[in-house]
Amino acid sequence: MANAEATAESSTVPSADPSTEPSAERPAIAQRPRVAIVGGGISGLAAAHRLVELAPQVQLTLFEASDRLGGVLETVHRDGFLIERSADNFITTIPSAVDLCRRVGLADQLLSTSGEHRQAFVVSRGRLRKIPDGFLIMAPTRLWPVLATPILSPLGKLRLAMERFVRPRVDDSDESLASFARRRMGREVYERLVQPLVGGIYTADPQRLSVRATMPRFVDMERQSGSLIVAALKQRRDDASKSNNGDSGARYSMFVAPRDGMSSLVDAISARLPRGAVRLSAPVDRIARRDDGRWSVLSAVTSPQHPALDEVFDAIIVAAPARHAAKLLDAVDGELAGELSAIEHAGAAVVALAYDRAQISHPLDGFGFVVPLVEKMQILSGSFSSVKYTGRAPDGKVLCRVFIGGACQRELLDQDDDALRRIAHEELAALIGIAGTPLLATVTRWADTMPQYHVGHVDRVDRIDAAVARHGGLMLAGNAYRGVGVPQCVQSGQHAAEQTIAYLLKRATA
Ligand SMILES: Cc1cc2nc3c(=O)[nH]c(=O)nc-3n(C[C@H](O)[C@H](O)[C@H](O)COP(=O)(O)OP(=O)(O)OC[C@H]3O[C@@H](n4cnc5c(N)ncnc54)[C@H](O)[C@@H]3O)c2cc1C
Image 1 (cartoon, rainbow, N blue to C red):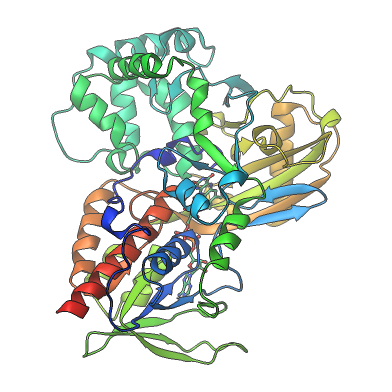
Image 2: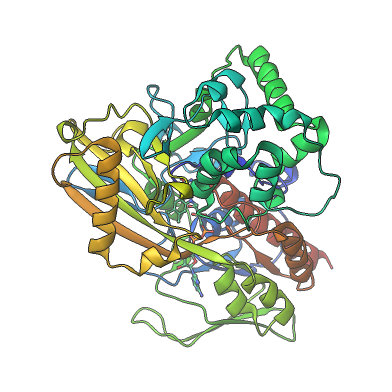
């Protein structure tokens, strides 16, 4: 996600029950119940942290298949560069991730995006053009910049201006994001702005992406105001009168990053978990419900540290990606497993490229860019990491990250690392004028890591919730359900932990 703006969308995880806040009295769970968490990405870690915070008497075991915690989150330090292999920041409008940072002692280490150059570009006819000020993914909050932009033709602008006269849809069923955007603003705005912005965030095909699951705010705007433009302009006036700040660039002030990278958040959480709670290189193969209502966690895979598993727990949180969760739960509930495996995933590669500043002719007066499919390039988006946050590159050097793949160009990931490095460097060089070769170039592949919230996703997640509710003591967490951003993952993990405590309390008092 080069442009993570929309990670604020689609957050419907219930917020924490105030009675379970850490300061409240510890819940009276008489015994020392055993709780298993499967998956040590940020969702599983947030669940573990919340459990320990709320009920330290719980005996927690977190099973992680790989030899490190964090899942996709990983920061690498090389030759003075700080390279994020996946997420490089998160939004603060959903406060769960910032709150978690505060609770693990990282509050004073959160960096805001650099105060300069708070803008982004879109590729238009082979050149980087500034995204019109105030164009927020699907709607302009300011008219003049969008009317003045060279990205759209006069006809495209006229069609956009007609948006306020397009009748709102009466049908309540879900719709694809592409259909919604084209219907409201016309084909050109969709192809030149909405598709690359959304594609850059979800690495998804907007023809299949659910507008209700990913951008519910815009569906509400249409329903309530009859027009996205009318609603967006009104929203901007309200915000400006509240904050005296009408600059849409302020959106970038909503993002933060840990000074030492995302791995420092992972490390700070794991340092607060009880000694021995985390088991690395411990993949779970299967979960089974026992006759006494408890849960068996099984694994045939052995490692030098851990023999084959067959352990019993009072409750279990499955925080592995949905397609793994489907396999784990197949024997417990075939219908639930079917719904989980129906959530498709896409993959992407992140190529980090470093240069001397003097090698690049572009002023680098923005945080990055997105590429419309109609431009027929191979890269999806790019981020100027060392412009966005301080401390990402030594003085006089530049760090960029280029994204390749996604749902619309899956075949690109079949190429080897050298080919990906070459594509990333050559296409970036054509956009920002680079002389010579990169100082360093790393490739990270994330196969099948991005859940695709296709049309019907909201209803599917409701069915998953209903199925999970049939199995007392089973909880799910992760990025496949109610938001892919780090804050939503934190929320889902914390919510699963709170539900686990509620289940254990109910069982203790039954
Ligand atoms: C390239 C990229 C860029 C991104 N950029 C941003 C961004 O800028 N901002 C933002 O907010 N979000 C971003 N995201 C999204 C966000 O980082 C992820 O959605 C989130 O980190 C996923 O966390 P998770 O714990 O749900 O899953 P994961 O990180 O996938 O963790 C799941 C864990 O479960 C383990 N596991 C799987 N199966 C088993 C098993 N059987 N037994 C034991 N363990 C198992 C895996 O090994 C893994 O460690 C980005 C994602 C990617 C891939």
